[in-house]
Image (cartoon, rainbow, N blue to C red):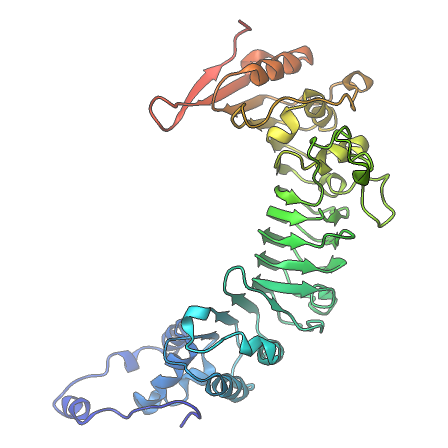
Length: 438
């Protein structure tokens, strides 16, 4: 019998039903199917199946998936801790553990579930799961509440995918040198309290609503990365090292970034502490170099968006790399507000085939330019550019300025399509093909 659980034997009615000719169809299923079903159940429910029949007695111990989560009824933290400790110890080396999910939400417990974190129970469970040679590990706390991961490196020859939500991640935990099989890392609502994020094997990195440190930049070194997604991230924009295998990058910087200036990064805000904005890098001694764009120079598909005032992309254009493989590019208001910055991108993207420009409401983002780039210094390089899409709510002065700039640099107007929001119908777009200026 499993310690810490209250299990009931089948009732006399159940036994009578079986004696009268009832059949246990579920128990007749192949073992692989039963293991799959047990892997979908919360661990406390999976363990309870041991009383169903003799065949079920030990099935839960060899299920390929473990789901540790709370449920209404756990009123005592000590009992829950004893259950999880016993669960992981009895798994032992009975069978490979393909996946382990630990999800802790305040609504699932009748006690202060953060006692589990404060007493380091969760830290021990993480290490226990890694010792079980888990391939996919997911750890999640309630939204906007965080748990500090242990200051110990993860060492696993089997870990392939790691998902973290609402945790504080430090230097040791984000050094994946000891995880040579890791290929996917997904983080959501996490605080990246680390000077570096390192992995020689990682191929896909997804970070959503994550905060980086406010001091020195986090260095991201992922030479095998193929896909990068940084969505609505804030804090100090990380330093992205060159990624030769990168194919796809989607990056969105939130307005509460540390790389923010009330004057949009033009250096004219009058605040001496920002040291001219576009030249300010932080206190790590790398002011005169590219922060982020250089790391994207090998990608074939790039989407870059940033809230007004976030200046790091504009700053990086001073050392703009050549995007030799870039085929498709999406830019939003941060770039198109300054057509010289847009032309700078085009001049450094010789293989570009499709450009998408995404504009927001004109009243929110006025056109500004600081004259930092001289487009005449370089020839226009995007000879392969065949499609330009401009997505906007209204065809206003910004759109006319873009059309004029692109036409000046040799892009035929019939290659440009404007997708204007159909505000009268409330949905959809009105597609306009440019034929000239009015």
